[in-house]
Length: 354
Image 1 (cartoon, rainbow, N blue to C red):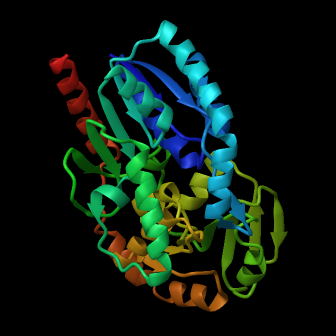
Image 2 (cartoon, rainbow, N blue to C red):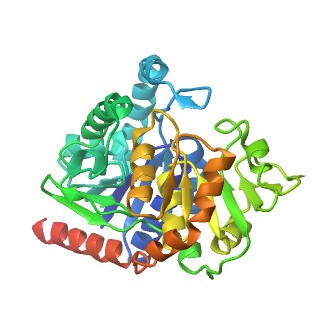
């Protein structure tokens, strides 16, 4: 089967998850062509070579580590002509040599447009659609109501009228729209095969732009050892070890951590939950998806969700690690088997209808 697969550039989680699916599809004899942009393009092109085609992607605008909604809108309007031209040329070029039987979109608009124009079956695979196609069983405070409505409208309009929506999620939410299936998080092979132990260190996954005072906050807990990823440098500040990114070392440290501190990014939280690591999550402001993920971490008693990192907050979180660890034992996931079985069934059904 010929499959066109699209993924966005925002957040490398989309790329790492998409690699898992594309690897599986290729292993099962499907012909897959991929469209994406920026960092995701570099990542996917490294693994899949000429199967990957560059397009122009959507970007979020940040101001002081917070997503700036107004600037994001202006940036989108400013870049729209260039995006449309580049994507049209990519669309025209791809059409000359590849006619897909099915399109898969991981929250990406170009492939949705391609499928709609050519009346090709479309499957959506992402974690974002939970905001639009499920009932969220969490409290949404007044200050998040606007972000919720904006996020819902964006998600609703992103991949319209897909034949099936596969929603990847580490938490359960009641489905309220048809043609929707919840599947467990998509996991890298290295995470599935990681040897899990409980060491003495805490893994922190952050960036310098989102946590300027993070190091000084962590230094207020000298009895704890923190291994910090996101600053992309090798430095030691007392009990705080900054690490440049190395996938192998990162996974080893994560698998042996006693707990993790992070923002509300879906991929990292999913991996932490799978490895049964208690989580302290601080969602990036104005990213409602991160608010949802962090809220469910707390709701399921897998950890705590705070508005910012403070030494007192971290102390309170660490005091309850045994409680979180017990709750995490209830989370069961057989690797990517549920996802792959569901995807195989959908592809078979589409083939039979053709």
